[in-house]
Length: 79
Image (cartoon, rainbow, N blue to C red; front, side, top):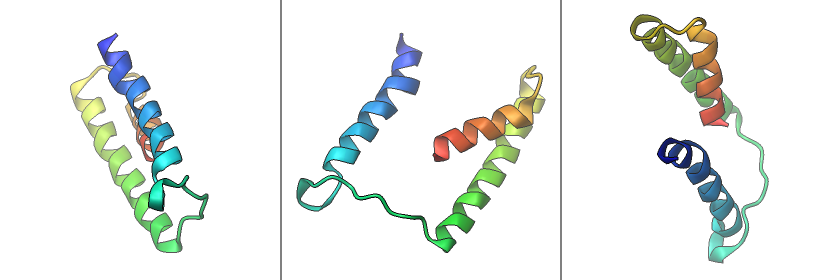
C-alpha cells in the first residue's frame, strides 16, 4: 500500500489540486502550448534521462529491456 500511495495516488491528487487551484487568485490553470525552447529542453531531459536510467537498469538490475523500460518511465514522468 505504501508504494502504491507514493507512486500512484500522490501525483494524481497533487495534479488535480494544481489544476484547480494553480492559477493566479486561485483560478484554474489554462491550457497552453509549450514553447520551442521548452520542446528542446524537455527533449534533452528525456534523452539524457532515458540513457541514464537505462544504463543503471542495464548494469544493476536483471531487466530484460532496460532502455525501452527506462524511456517509458522517463517520458511518463515528464508528461
